[in-house]
Amino acid sequence: MKTREEKLAEAFENGTYIEVQFLIGWGAREKLPKEYLIEKKLDTAIERGTRDLLNPDDLVPRKAIEEKKSEMLKYMGDWKRCLPSGIKSLNFIRKDCLFETLEYLRAVEKEVKQLAINWADALTEAEKRYATEHPDKYSPGKYPGKQEIINGVIFNYTITNLSPPAKEMLGKEEYEKAIENTKSRISRAGDIIVEGFVTDLVSNLKKLKKGTEDDGKMNGKVLKTSKKLVSLFKESLDVFILNDQIKKAVDELDELIEDDDPSELAKLIRDDDELKKVVAGITTNIMGELKKIKDAPVRRAIDF
Image 1 (cartoon, helix red, strand yellow):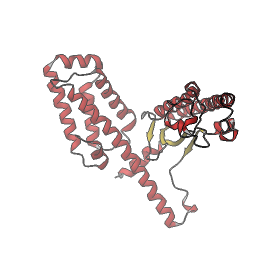
Image 2 (cartoon, rainbow, N blue to C red):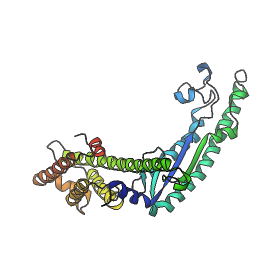
Image 3 (cartoon, rainbow, N blue to C red):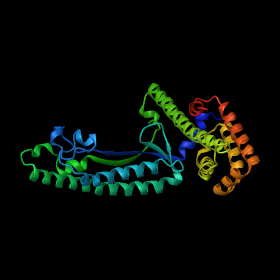
Image 4 (cartoon, helix red, strand yellow):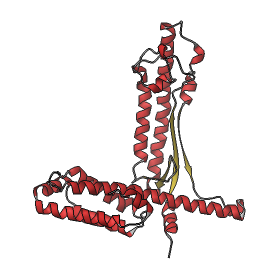
């Protein structure tokens, strides 16, 4: 019979790892005296070292880069596509999502290059303006050149592998250590997936139960989240979450919501006291069963 680690290793073979780096520098060289600041209300990150020459409008290109980073993090945070590995910036990409993900990252890379140029242009123009308006305070050596600013915006991605090198490349002792390290990483990645999913599941169950209480109001959004969690588990996570009690909890939640429209089901529950009791009983039972699980990642996720 295969161990949990062996089953997880097989699951993680059906995809690859991608490491994404997205850093946004301010292009600063030194901290400037506070009395030199044109705009006193700029945030402290700017005051600490970017410019004594920025007006709020100059930050628009910078904010565009930050928005692109937020969009990218949201994309890579979609568990139907990418799973956390336990290592910062490293995600496991399912094989059937790999082409789409690489296409997206290539597009982001191209966009970020242009956004970095826009940011550098804005700062360069701001520097020229400052030199004209404040020649007594302007010192060219304080400010980075255009290319230096562009180089401060870093976006790259790398397809990588957590497997150890071939046995012949290492001595016996080092190879055994590498194997154990790989097993540990795989186990930790599995734990992170379990903990993250159970955290979301418990949060959803609590909201479902609250919606059945006298002062509660069942919300269609909560039921929609329930459907998403069930779908996520059945389509993407069941090969990584190997605990039978968690699978049973998902099945029971699936039976509760069935194929009903979330908004219509929410209205039915709000209007029917007996149905409220049924939903309350089922959610209480599911949470009670989850609470019995002794696995560490599940215990960390449960706080009720």
